[in-house]
Image (tube, rainbow over all chains, first blue to last red; front, side, top):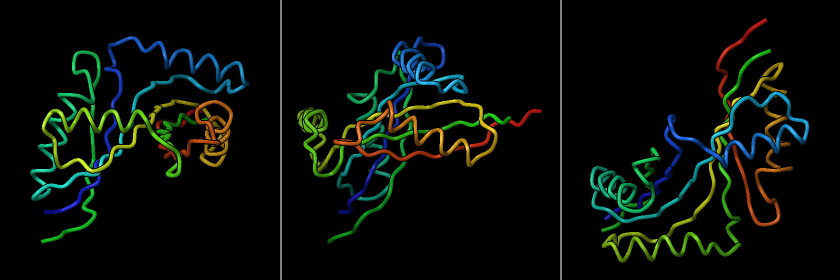
Length: 88
Length: 88
């Protein structure tokens, strides 16, 4: 078994309204950051997991995203995987 | 002026309790993902901004993080910058 670190990025789909991002953009403008043109607000997860190999880890994280971490109707996700340690 | 895309990652400091991450880990275990050993839940922002150059963009995004996007007492942040377009 190996230990993997998965970094998961969940963002609103481009066609979906993002009220949190809009609110943050307004806040940045009010603070004087006038150069800000667009803000999209999403979520970020760091997940340490054990898996037999990187292919299995990738399949597992993809399933986690679809079952719990993201709402595929309105959100999209991507992730990267990093091998942390390998043991017997 | 140039357009930059900043990708900002905000996570709880390692020494700070992360109840959202703990809840998500329990949920993953209940769904059968028994290999999950740790979950940290954070936030992710995509910000399009105009700046004179990459150094100015970096300073601006760092200030945004400290003033609005992250709470430095309990959160840490990092970001990367990508040049999208340059105009007159």
